Amino acid sequence: MAQHTHSPGRFFVIGIFMILAIIMADQYSKWFVLETMLRSSDVALTPFKDWFFTSNEISIFEDMREEYNTVAITSFMDFVMVWNRGISFGMLQNGGNLMTMGLIFLAIIVSLFLIIYMVLTNRMLINISSGMIAGGAIANTIDRIRFGAVADFIDIHVNGMHWPAFNIADAAIAVGATIFIITTLMTPKNNAQK
Image 1 (cartoon, one colour):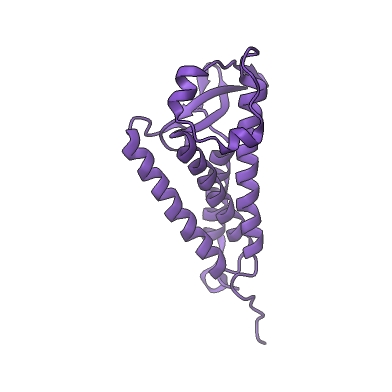
Image 2 (cartoon, rainbow, N blue to C red):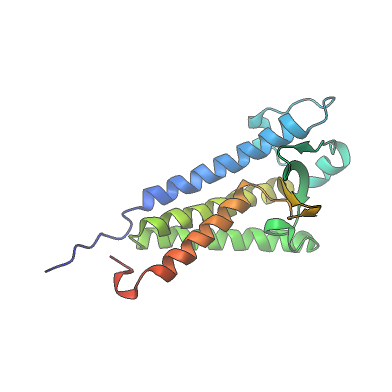
């Protein structure tokens, strides 16, 4: 009995949707939290459109507008303002402009690879997870290009110990990578492309 196989790229649109959804959720959440929740009250609100299309260097924000509050959301989560020049969760912070350019280049290469892979595979979970990773990488790259650093604002803490601040893009990358690895490991080789 012949087995039915699905053509490659069948779930490509779902992956592209995930990329766009993650980018939008990440960028809008950064604007909403930073501008409407953490900004000091004497600083005027920047509309989302203006915030999204700004290309100010990070020094503008740090030297001229670094007036942020901390907002407690739950007993274990706060919203804070952290400009991250490194990679996800605050790693590799001290690399300077060369590190920033390298991370932009790496994110573009990884995202292109994942998009191509989404065209070639016929597995829905792989497309979803690839879209989450690529969307998160692109969203943080948008920050790096615009500001020279990534805006992180989620602070998880337990008993005085804090996880490095992160954002929606970082969370999407972590969850997407987990789904990708589990899906890949749990799929038998003879069923991998069915």
